[in-house]
Amino acid sequence: MKATNIRQYSSIASKTLTIVGVIMILSSLLDFIVLSIPFNISSRAWQIGLATQIVDRGIIPMVGMALLVTGYWVSSNSGLQDTSTPSILDLRFWALLLASLLGLVYLLLFPVHLNNTSQARAEAIQRIDQQASQAETQLEARIGSSEFKNQIQQRRSQLKNQITNLLADETRLNEALENEQLPSQVKSLLEQSKDNPQAIDEFLNRQAEQLPNQLLTRIRSRKQELEEQANRNSFKSSLRTGLSSLLLAVGYIMIGWTGLKNMGIIKGKGRRQNPAR
Image (cartoon, rainbow, N blue to C red; front, side, top):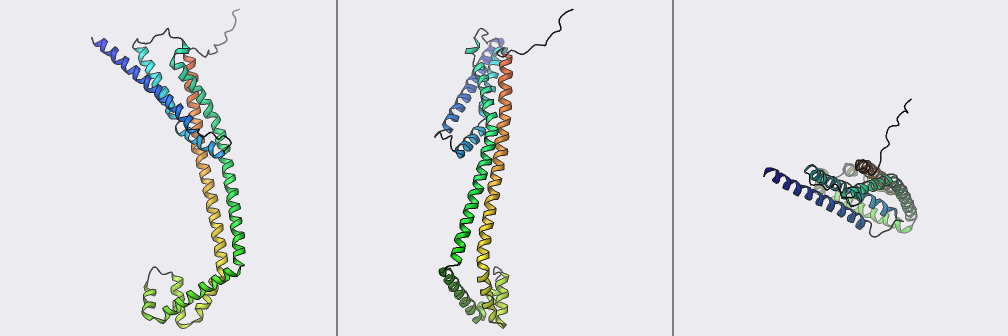
């Protein structure tokens, strides 16, 4: 009675493992197909995105294959395995063949993805350089225009009136000087303006002269920030997806070839024996 129960439980466990393994493998293959839609192999961004997603999901078919093989192992140890089944009808054969194929795919993805990320980084940096050059050209044209000069003059007059009105109201002036959020440069200007009214004009003239350089520095700083971001993203993608693809390739190839060899599909080379004398 006890042996019968063990045999029943082994049969249930074997079928469950096999079914779950097959479902995981087939659902993964369907997922890979759906991820490639819409098919646009000429797009480098599409290739990078597809490779990243396929690598991220690469462990799922491997787990399915492990469950499938485990199910057959349980069945074999329990005496439930039909050894007369041809290899071509054995699910293990197709799973191991698929493992070998996936190993080849992930092995090819490794150099292809590294090349794509490198090319994408170069294109991104080139695009950033072009945008920065265009922004600098537009800035130079804007600085030389009368409209920009009028805007600077209007802004200068507004600031001067605000500071002059603040200096005329001692209560507001003291409150401003006691405000911790007020920049130290402005506080220093207010202190100097009490004894030297010309300090306001000197400060505003200096600010107007430094404005073009400040705008140019802002453009170049933004350019450097975007280039560093592009390099960082390319490095992360190459390291994460590239190495993961290589590890998956090694794992699938070992599973496929080792399994097929144990099933007798792939014949190993025997040792060469010396002829008897």
